Length: 97
Image (cartoon, rainbow, N blue to C red; front, side, top):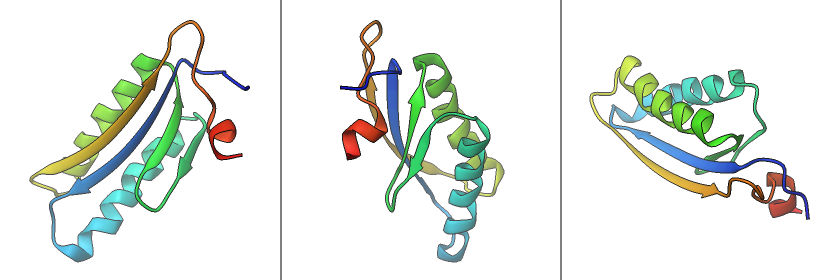
């Protein structure tokens, strides 16, 4: 059983904008997540990221701000957090293998 990181977060952002603006804003959020340099997987409904708790919480916060900066007046997000300091959490690869 592979346990490397203390935290895993799955986030889905739902910027409240015109329908044709949703995907470009979500793509900007995914670009930001990619730039963080942490392991991540983009799925059809959410993106999962692995790392330390504080870094991931900052990423969650920044994802909200990106949506607003890109034109959303309002953003709703669904966030799942798996946090186990000391022992770590199952990796994305372990969960999906």
